Structures are given as structure tokens and as C-alpha cells.
Length: 81
Image (cartoon, rainbow, N blue to C red; front, side, top):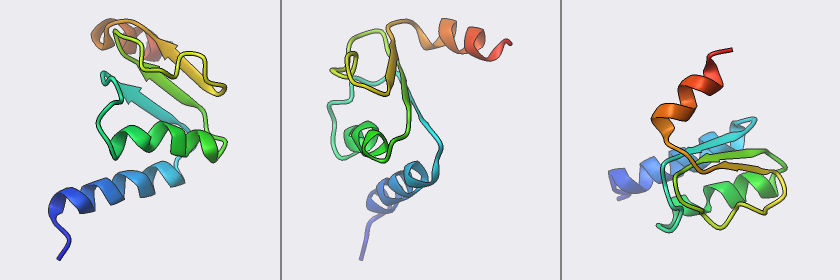
């Protein structure tokens, strides 16, 4: 039987497949399988926005906007307008 963790991961990929874009917050994207979500979205032609203090390896990828800043400072500014 599939464990809860596997169902949650499957659900995350299904939601990403149905989304228009992916917003990644506060992760270095090194723990798989979730770290594969940005590449999955990019392969489907969806834009990816990453907000993380440190680089993730996606900073030069086409279709990605990566902001190296604090989530607490950046999100309010993004949604203020």
C-alpha cells in the first residue's frame, strides 16, 4: 500500500502538471523527488519563480526567475500591487 508521503508527492506532481506556473519558496532544491518539480514544469513550458536566499542551480535556466532574498521580505512586495 502506498504511504501518505508517496501520495503527497504524487499529488504535488499532479498539481504542478495542472498549474500555469510554479512558485518555489525557500528550498535549495536538492532533496528528491520534490526537487524535480521545477524541471518537470519547465519541460511542460511553464514558468518557474524561485525565491530562496541561496542559489539553486536554476539561476540561468530559461523560463526561470530566481530571486535571492528573504521570503518574508519578497512575498509581500510581490503581492502588494
